[in-house]
Every structure is written in structure tokens, then in C-alpha cells.
Image (cartoon, rainbow, N blue to C red; front, side, top):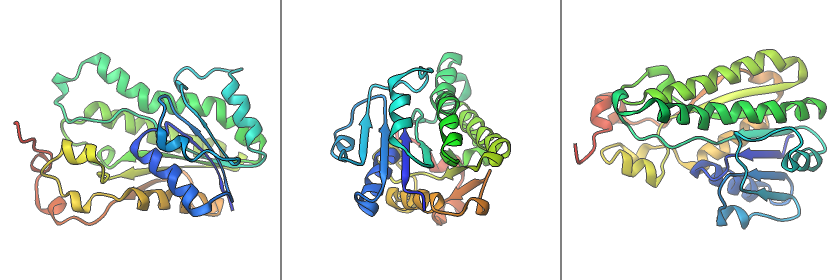
Length: 250
């Protein structure tokens, strides 16, 4: 049973919830390494003899020889699970209101960070006997909603990366899956979509439990998948997309 976790981009709302949930469920019976760019008090409170938290780390700038990489390599003495939770939050904007520079930044924050993390962490995983890789995607990659192009393109690149890694490195005992989320029950999503069915948005602890359960699956049970997570919502099936994301000031 794999209870070794590396969370990258951990100051996302989901990253914080996942780290806390791992500690709540396993206490000291796990090894957890947390990495983020900005500092977070809640994550610092999780630190103990089996949990390391390092902030000030730009995942786009990771390079061979960095101290953080050696620390991760030393910390895990066997296979581990990487959960990549980095990426800018999305506000619904039409394509023509989102500049090329902003779109590139969005792509870098989701796909670029994942690619660079895997460039440096995957060799460690292979040497330690394999492991699991999980990322977070969005159901927008399937439905291609309007007013979401840069975010959708970035998440589609994440999904493609996961599938390619799974196919290329299954021979190394590497399992890679992407979890496609509907809206999360967070203050950011409630504010950005005031007319959405917030009651039926995904609970952070439920998503965190799903991540943990996938990490504990046997390797042959799931690899190279886009796993859809959603809670049934009557409004989702009976209202139009633009109604659900309507803003009060529009």
C-alpha cells in the first residue's frame, strides 16, 4: 500500500485540502513531501518528522542539481505518488478578451509545471521501483465550453501528457491518471459563478479521498485514464452553460 506522497503546487485550495486529508487519515503512518511557490500557514502546521514542507519553489524553474530535488530523492526510500495540483485559477472570459501572453502564462502554469516536474521526478520514481502520478483536469476538455479556451487547452495538454507517460512508462511500473473535475466547492468558484448549483459542487474532502483511493489501487487496475468526478446536479442537465456561469454584473 503506497502511503508516500509528493504534492506539487500545494497551495491550491485542493492541494491544501489533500495534504490535510492525508495527515488526518494516516497520521504518522505516511511520508508526505509538500512543495509550493508561496508560503501557507495551514501547510506549515502539518510538518512533523514524516512531513516536509518547502515553499518558494518555482516549478517552471526546477533544474538538475537543485537542493529540493536531492531532498525529495533522499526523503522517499521506496515508490511514491506524485499529485500535481499547480495551475492558475480560471475566470470565464471570451477568447478575444484573453491575450496571447495571458494564454501562454495559463499554459505554463498547468502544463509547463507538470512537464518540468516529471522531467526531474520521473527518473527518481523509476529508480525506486515505480509509482503513481495524478493530476487534476476539468470536464471542459470533453465539452469545450465557450469562454474557457486557454484553461481548456492547458488542461487538455495535461491530459495528453498523462496518457503519454502512462503508455511510455508502464514498463517502469509507472501509473499515471488525470482526475477531471466539475466545479469544486470553494469560495473562488462560488464567487466566480454566483448562479451555479453550489450545493452540488464537489466537496474537497471527497475529492481528496478519491485521490488517496486511486493511489492505493493495484497498478494493473487503472492506468492512462481521465477519471471524471462529479455530483449529480439537476441544474447541470436542465440549464444552459451560459446560464450557469452568468455574472451579476453582466
